[in-house]
Structure formats: structure tokens, C-alpha cells
Length: 176
Image (cartoon, rainbow, N blue to C red; front, side):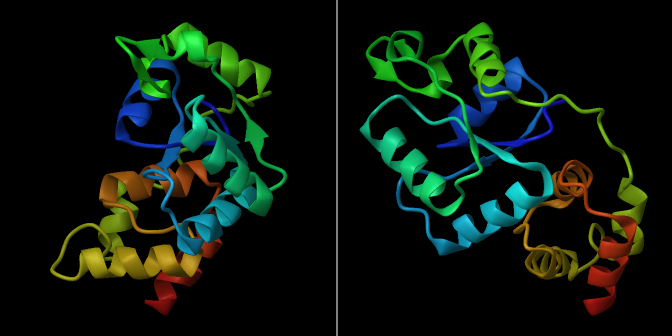
């Protein structure tokens, strides 16, 4: 599993990168992201690092520069234009898995053992997975931890991959 969280532009990028490597990902959903995403990425970068992997076009360069301006320690993975184009469409979603893997190697992505500190039973016990207000509780927990909102399955993966400790989790749950 890649230790860092990979930042891409959209859902199709996530799907394609997931075909190449086991990793956690965050999408900017284009160029119009705000301060909330930057703040979330700062927290994630402090916890496990981020790697920016955007399209080799104008918008991708703008996104990369904007994130890098706020998070200068972010790593950068690049895919060249000829490796990211299919039928006139340019983007990470078109790159072959080997190209993505090579870009991440050049960015010095770190490989880590998959951590399984938390299991679904922890979320159920904390009222984060089952119950009428579990969605609101997950939203609040994400705010407290500074990682954002995720559904139950995603939250479980993020708790483990972001290196959140049992103490941090219990303290945050106590604040709910």
C-alpha cells in the first residue's frame, strides 16, 4: 500500500489509479476547490503525506501549483502528455497502470504495510455506522479530526491509512 494519500482531479482518475496501486485518494473535483479542501489536505499531509498527481494540462498545472503553494512539502508525480491521452482525451484517467506506477516511483512514494487498527465494529460501537444520526456523527468526527466527511467504509479506511491513533479516535468520539 502507498503510504501517502494521492491527490487527483476527479472520480475517473481515482478509478484508474486504484487499478494501478493500493492507496488512499482525494479528488479536488476540478479547479474550483476551496479553503476547506486545502485545510483537509494539510492535515492529511501532516499525518501521512500527499502526492499530487494531476492531468498534464493547464487546469492540472493550476491545481498542482495552488496545492503546492499551501503545502510545499507535498510530493509530485507527473505523467507526460503522450502517456495520458486516448482518443483526444487528456488526463490521468487515460494512463496505463505501468505509467502511474512509474510516476509514483519517481515521486518517491513510500510503501507501507496496510494498517488495521480500526475495524467496522469500532464504528458501530461509536454510533458512526449504524443508527439514525450516524451520518451526522461521521461528519462531526471528520471535522474534529480535520479529515473531512466519509461514508462508513471510507472512514474506516481513512482512520487506518491516516495513522489516527486509538486515543485520538476515542477523544474525538467523546466530543460527539
